[in-house]
Length: 59
Image 1 (cartoon, one colour):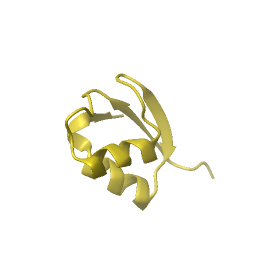
Image 2 (tube, rainbow, N blue to C red; image 1 turned 90 degrees about the vertical axis):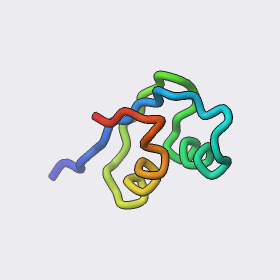
Image 3 (cartoon, rainbow, N blue to C red; image 1 turned 120 degrees about the vertical axis):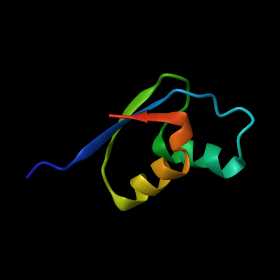
Image 4 (cartoon, rainbow, N blue to C red; image 1 turned 180 degrees about the vertical axis):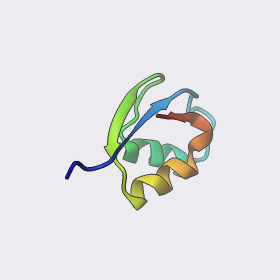
């Protein structure tokens, strides 16, 4: 059975944001603007996405 994935893109700069939010972006593997990553859909990943959802687009 195929594992579910979620595709996220960083659309807002993390400059001037809270430090924990920058660490969440690092944990998601996002380093630069308009970078897209595809991650496995787990509760931990969902939690990080929810924390910084104002900086992301989710596909």
